[in-house]
Image 1 (cartoon, rainbow, N blue to C red):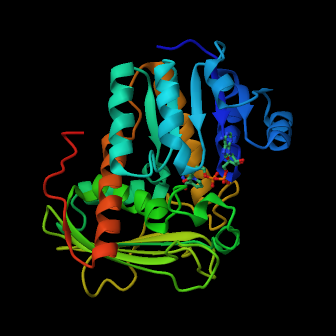
Image 2: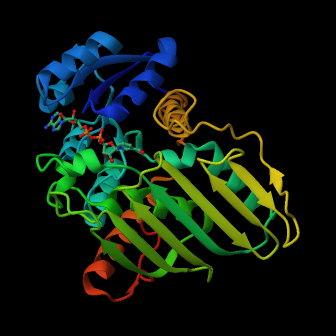
Length: 354
Ligand SMILES: NC(=O)c1ccc[n+]([C@@H]2O[C@H](COP(=O)([O-])OP(=O)(O)OC[C@H]3O[C@@H](n4cnc5c(N)ncnc54)[C@H](O)[C@@H]3O)[C@@H](O)[C@H]2O)c1
């Protein structure tokens, strides 16, 4: 049990930080945004004005503040390992945005340090909190589609503005840019949570638009799960449709189609002649991802709320960090395959060992 209000310090105040802060405010007296910090002081001052909290001079000052219990790390990927290490060395609780680190080794280091520190630690992987994916998990567990033979994910975004700005960290691999890192962290987590570990994979990464960066803007990763099922992931950061996701599951008895741009969002099909399907109508249509009611926004609210309530109650959060760490092993394997053109085995990595 942790006493309330839980005092949170937020490091990094980009777009997604606003959703985290909204979640904290919605929790009323259980949470206090104690301090915020950003490399851009004007951004930090405006954020503090809107959401509350002191403005810390820098990340070190934020971590050293004795009146902060939790550090919420929402920073560019190249800073994650260093900042997470400092937070854990200071004995503070840690919520950190996905991907926990830019590579599997870094993810393992943070995971092990968090265990040693004995703090409340959660990788913010909002896929676990999306109503549509929770419905898919329930339907699979209930045996509604039988054994899953094939799963396909599609993540489409439009990052053209970031990818046109050579000063943006997303344009450089050294700074943690990379479409497969950014979106693979979600999809590999989702597949692992729903269906288990990956046996092997191969990948193709393409830079289809000549924007001033070194990053792939489109990628396909396919492979086999330990269950024998086939998986296929399509990622693009140059789509001209709204930011959205799709999940298709094909089993021995039925299938599930999820698309955040479709209304209804989730349909269950039972057999080749089930033309209507069954609408899973507890999943609301909210295609504007980044605003209240949107599929993404609402999942992040639930994620942050789960982190705080599980901390207060002294229980683990819904998310199993090992799945999110394991996703980074798949990201590393995917990049190895993209660079060599060869399939990569993941048979020697298990979540139990993480
Ligand atoms: N769950 C999701 O779907 C989702 C969506 C968006 C972002 N994210 C994750 O959130 C994290 C941040 O991404 P973003 O899109 O908000 O990035 P961003 O570039 O929009 O924001 C990062 C912020 O960090 C600040 N910053 C950079 N260096 C700093 C330093 N040394 N000290 C203090 N502040 C510093 C920048 O000024 C900027 O305001 C990443 O891990 C990203 O993958 C997750």
